[in-house]
Amino acid sequence: MKKTALITGSCGLVGSECVRFFSKKGFRVIGIDNDLRQFFFGDSASVKENKFKLIEEVKDYLHFDLDIRNREDLKKLFKEYKFDLIIHTASQPSHDWAKNYPLIDFEVNTFATLNILENFRKYSPGGVFIFTSTNKVYGDRVNSFSFLELDKRYDLSANDPYYQGIDENFSIDSTLHSIFGADKLSADILVQEYGRYFGLKTGVFRLGCISGPYHKPAELHGFLSYLVKCAVYNKEYTIYGYKGKQVRDNIHAYDLVTAFYYFYLNPKYGEVYNLGGGRYSNISILEAIELVEKIAKKKFRFCYLDSPRKGDHIWWITDNSKFRKDYPSFNLSYKVEMILEEIYQNYKR
Ligand SMILES: NC(=O)c1ccc[n+]([C@@H]2O[C@H](COP(=O)([O-])OP(=O)(O)OC[C@H]3O[C@@H](n4cnc5c(N)ncnc54)[C@H](O)[C@@H]3O)[C@@H](O)[C@H]2O)c1
Image 1: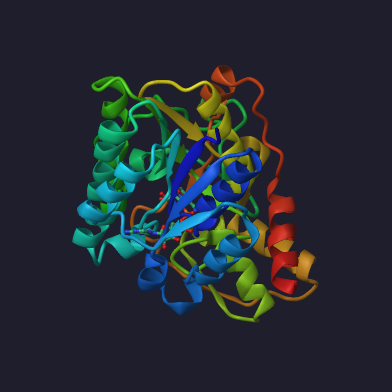
Image 2: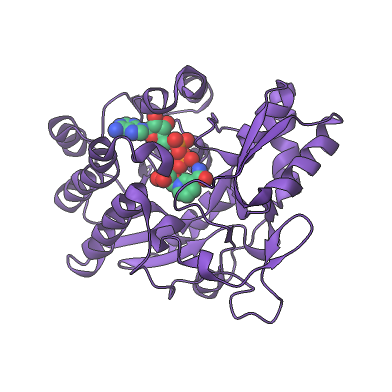
């Protein structure tokens, strides 16, 4: 009999990659997405197109428009299906958006995660639960590092203990998380507890920038996709602070979902992993602009505001060693150059 996977946020960047990936692996895939992304970021960020494509292209995909905050609807779904795998990607994903709507952010990012966990515990306790957390749970502690200011980026010297990236031992305390970071951290800890306290198979993935062709970008979320979109449509891009030298590591959604698959095959109980592009795939805004100009073969329009977003990282590179140690077959396949090229080609199609 076919295994069944539940993907929340199934029409978003990570969710839609999960639907395609696990369907190809032979799962029956059930998705939940009510296009709240359109409510968060406007019509241009709507995931409706992704939903229609999934329904049309993915065999056996079953879509539910329901809201993960709704206790009755979720319970009904969990009573009807037994899930072997749950990947919870539905979220309000922007820390800037959350500051104006803390209650909605909490309901979507924290309460709804508990709502799903409780149904998982009651109705599918034999399954595997994967949660998409964020590096924002570590707050902005990284900004206190002594960075070298290079021509187009801030970076650490090669002999700095964090040169290869930030690992899971980085403190989460006494730092500015943002409302979003605090809500995601609460959910992240709940997922750990359902593993440790209730003895369920749960994994927390603390992620940096994720990219891929299915992102519906907005200025407040989807860094590389939004940058490419600006290039394609000649829209002016605004750089917020740090001279455009802030660095992000970037992981392709496909690589991330491959990591989820390894976890599913050999699950743990309440384990936490940092995962990102690491030293293998990272870029500053100025470097990304230069690269996009090369790919699009035209000048990129941008302006500069000398005020960073509150809580924004100056630099983030993930240390993937813990995941690589537990799952040695896992490798990153996409470098940031390939990711940008793919996003660009997707817009030109
Ligand atoms: N994209 C990144 O760079 C990044 C970085 C770190 C962490 N993450 C985390 O990874 C996860 C996936 O991110 P993404 O980029 O795919 O986000 P996304 O916005 O593309 O996808 C999330 C989907 O969830 C849906 N959704 C939101 N609230 C919902 C609700 N109440 N009920 C039903 N559906 C709802 C949205 O409509 C959207 O399609 C999120 O948890 C996010 O916090 C993302």
